[in-house]
Length: 110
Length: 114
Figure (cartoon, each protein chain N blue to C red):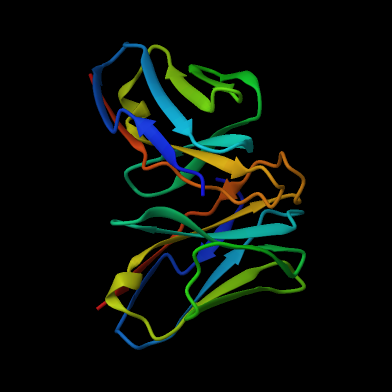
């Protein structure tokens, strides 16, 4: 069973700050998703990555498969970035089952 | 808007009852996944269907069952409901089952068991 840990669990920052959320997992994976869950409950897939780095706008995700670690960075954070961010590694053996971290609750203060 | 639809948005029912949650995947997606998000357990994978066939099973209780129909919509049936089944139920869809498909989440169904 893949044990997934995220840190920090809660993060409050001022608008404009650079944000880093970390995700570690215990067993080999095929890929990892970063998800964003807004206060209303809806889930949006931000990234799916299996190696290296991806960038969408102010969001950057990196993964090191050998070290079993991924990070999500937000540059120039904004109050609308306030949400819960969840990492979800995917099983190595192709059935696309996701295991979810407990999430990081991010609050950006204007 | 992910293109995945779920109905109903909210459902309130009593213990012992049976409910059916419905999910329509994005156009062209063959895989449907069901997830449960409860306060104490977080997000958990329940089950995956691909083109009508069960593909993977997670922490799905025996009281729960699912199916995917020929038009690719899926239903999650929850029976003999207990208070602890109160949760948000999400479905997601993806194009196939190769290792690198992104999953697109529906808005969820909030189930409250009283």
